[in-house]
Length: 458
Image (cartoon, rainbow, N blue to C red; front, side, top):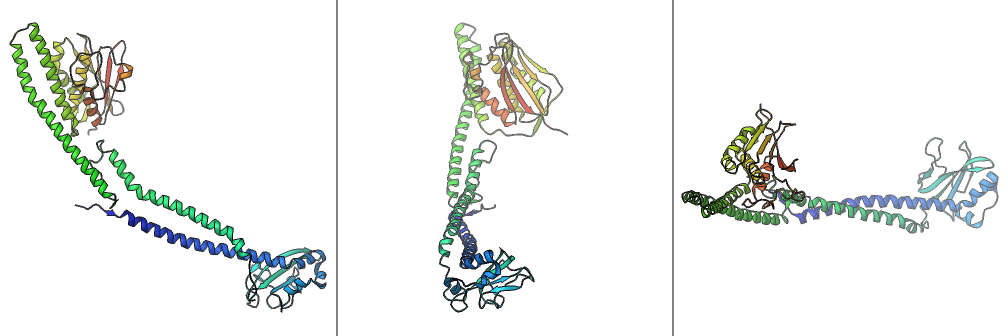
């Protein structure tokens, strides 16, 4: 016997949270590194271009000759090889250097290939650690390439604007990370609760063709005791119901014989009014006992046999078994089969019991002497329809939805019983994969229709 696999819900949650945390840490670290690098570079580029604004303005206004005029003290200090850390070069369209700051000849210009200046760079031509950028300026002398860079090896180079500029991207990454963690936790919770939802769906199918008990497979060790408790409660409930069904069936079976003997003894007394009244009472008791026994048998799960039988033959047999009762009350039953044999697969005795219940119900709701028809319609699309029609007053509209409930009783009949016949019939039909319905027929009477799948034979 295979043991049901189980696991710890707490351990699984802990492992999943650890895995999510590690993955989030790795992804977050990579994203933060990229974002901070991009922020630092953008701030650096903005800073050095702002520091060279006086030079670029002169180039755009005066061209190369503007570089021959003295710069302001602050600009001269920044681009001095001794006191500053900045440097620049100016290149003509052919790539020739036509202007430069002191000390920049060895580090700049910086090219990506043979003739394409690098848009951004972090290493000088001589291998020095300089961060710089390239822009093309429109000047009176035509388009000129302007490269500006900063020597990052100087100890006083500080990007003090980086923390402020990086605040929003960092908060964005942290917010996105928190949202992803929340979604991951919700998904993890739903994934963890999936076995419980499966157990709930399994519980809904108990007694409706599903498994008799809840499965413990693929459940956590924390939830398994609950499943065991539910299965134990179902076992105790089944035991109690089985005892009750057995007791009802045994009592009903034991009462049948004394009632039959009592009815026979009453036949010997004569035919006066008192004897007739006693006979009706005994017949009513016999009907109650019969329904009680039938309900006890049907309440159990019907054994679905693999027998194949002809529904027309079964209908003839059902009519013959109750022919004596029908004759005594002046009714005539007519079996109308419009086609040849129609094979049905299942429990012949149970289907016959359902047909007898419908015939007896039709007799109870028909006027004296009115015929009862049992019709077998030609099969269509693999389904055969059996109809039982009476000549009574029909079914009220408000009773259509409740007529197949247990203990349902019509208000216009004097038939004794527990009101279980139609409920039993519906259970038998549904157990065979069929359907049952009722409708009113003109000029009067009710028609009960049973639809059953036709057996597929070789």
